[in-house]
Amino acid sequence: MAVRIDGKAVAAKVREEVAAEVAELKAQGVETGMAVVLVGDDPASAIYVNNKKKACSETGIYSEVHLLPTETTQEELLALIEKLNGDPKINGILVQSPLPRHLDEKLVVEHIDPKKDVDAFHAYNVGRIMIGDFTFLPCTPAGVMKLIHETGLSVEGKRCVVVGRSNIVGKPMAMLLLHENGTVTICHSKTKDLAAICREADILVAAVGMAKLITADMVKPGAVVIDVGMNRSENGKLCGDVDYEAVEPIAGYITPVPGGVGPMTIAMLLKNAVRAARLQNGL
Ligand code: GUN
Image (spheres, rainbow, N blue to C red):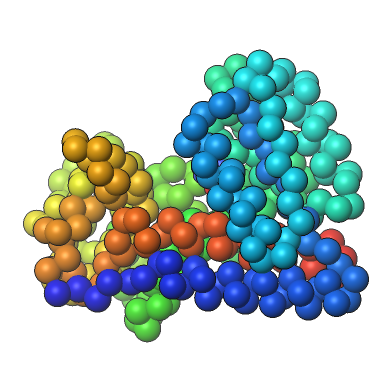
C-alpha cells in the first residue's frame, strides 16, 4: 500500500508561508500585485482564473482580472500586456491559456516582461531554468518537486521517468529533476515500449492528459508516482493519468487526483508573485 501524498495539505502550508511573506512586505510598504488576463469564455479557464483570484485574496495579494471578449485582436491584447508591464501596482502577469485560435500565444507570452512572468513561460525564463539559474520556478513542476521532497527521499541518483514533453510541464519537470541529480528519461507519444521504461522508474511523473494511461504493470514496486493529469473518465469522473486503484497497492508513494498536484500549481504561482514583488522592489 502506497503512502498518499496530500497535495492539498502541502499547498495549504505553502500558502501560509506566502501570506506571512506578503504581510511582511506590506509592513515594509510593498504591496504584492498580480494581473490575470482571460480572453474568451472557456468555462474551465473561467474556473481556473476564479481560483487564482480567490487564492490571491486569501493570501493578501492584490489582484485584478482582465476579462476580454473572444474577438479581442492581437493588437488589443498586446497593448494590455504593455500597459501591465509598465504598471507599478502589478508585479506578476498571467495570461490564461489556451487563447482563442486567432491569437498567437507564443507572441503574447514573449510580450510579458520576463521580470513579471510568474508562469515562467517566457523564453528568457525557460532558458534560465535550462541553465539552472532561475528567478521563477515553473509552477506545476515546482509543485511536483515539493511533493517529492515531502516523501523525505532524495532525487539524487534515482531513475526518473517523465511521461509527457509539454513546454509547461514535461520539459521543465525533467530539468528540475536533473538539477537535483536524477537520471532522467522523457517519454512521449512516439516512445517505444513505454511500459518497460516506466517500470525502471524510482520516480515516475505522468503528465500527458490521458486518463489512466499508467497501469499497474508499468510501475516498479515502491516507486514514487506523481500524477499531473486532470481528465474525465468514461463515466465523467475526474481522474488522472494514473490508474490510481490499480497502482496504489504497488507504489511506495502516490498523489491522488484531485488533491495531489492540482492545488500545488496555484500555491507555487503565489510564491512566484511574492518573489516578483520582492525583486521589483530591490529586496
Ligand atoms: N492554463 C492551464 N494551466 C495554466 C497555467 O499554469 N498558466 C496559464 N497561464 N495558463 C494555464
